[in-house]
Length: 123
Image 1 (spheres, rainbow, N blue to C red):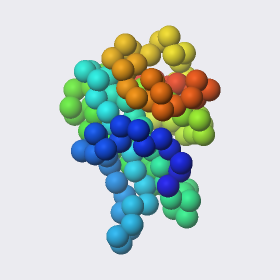
Image 2 (cartoon, rainbow, N blue to C red; image 1 turned 90 degrees about the vertical axis):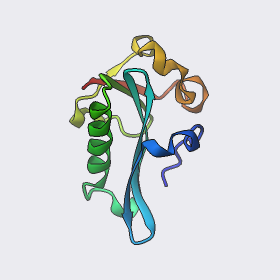
Image 3 (cartoon, rainbow, N blue to C red; image 1 turned 90 degrees about the horizontal axis):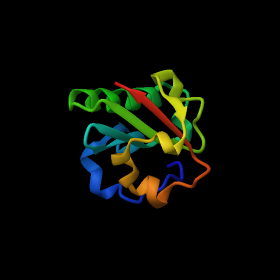
């Protein structure tokens, strides 16, 4: 849908929030758990559905589920949506500020380039 890395996605299918229209997935977001730290990933909206609020809705639901499950903070990597995530309370940080458990994710180890912005929020 948005050329996002799929590495590790199969292992966290239960962490996906989907928006479906008919038989088509039109938006998604996923949360990976690393102890009390969540990694928000795979946030995508089909091009024809952008600017409709679907992206905000799937992210809000993923964050809500993370909070309900006891996660205290969330990190993410993005190359294209730096301006989108501050609406939820995310702020940019350096890779050195990423909580240790999240560094074990495939996104931090290999899937996302070093040029990706790193963001964090407390729940």
